[in-house]
Image 1 (tube, rainbow, N blue to C red):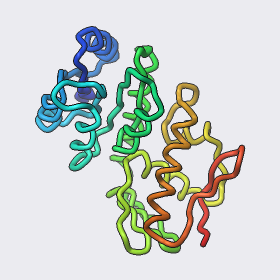
Image 2 (image 1 turned 120 degrees about the vertical axis):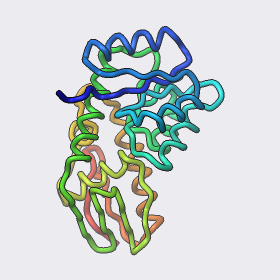
Image 3 (image 1 turned 180 degrees about the horizontal axis):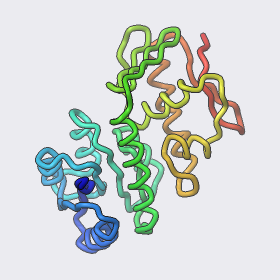
Image 4 (image 1 turned 90 degrees about the vertical axis):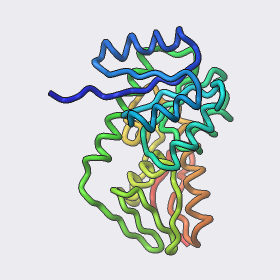
Length: 230
């Protein structure tokens, strides 16, 4: 019998814990809980959850700081909860390495769909055979999530790497934002297309600051594609 996926809920509101736990346990997930940032880090290190639902506004240490600390040593999928729904909160969370975000108040059904999508992507990554892509000035190693541009390692958040790998695996092919949401984030209708734009912007900045070539081309009004250009 396969052990159930272990999900850590980090929030300081009891009602939020109760609501999320109810839906997760109905789906067969194992639920762990933390109520502040310090406890979240301790629980993460102790139990190695399969996914973390992380609120931004936490006592002792906020969700941004928790996400930053986790990303120093672990690639555990993280879905961030934000009460504000402001673009700044979403962008900062994604830059720090969060895999997705959900705005409060949220639909438990939508959150569950996001959780399943992120876990599917994580399972595909962990079960993949060794793969390496090589282009002029760039090397991508799928298993180690390592990217080198002009022999310099470029630090990417997990979802930034997933986006780059998908585009680089299909060079020259144009993808709309909706297609990228489906293939990289693994959901169709629940995603915000601006999530794609944010990731592309950050990814492009990191790649171009490390080398002399450009790798992601914007086709205005249509989407993005991978191509190597000076």
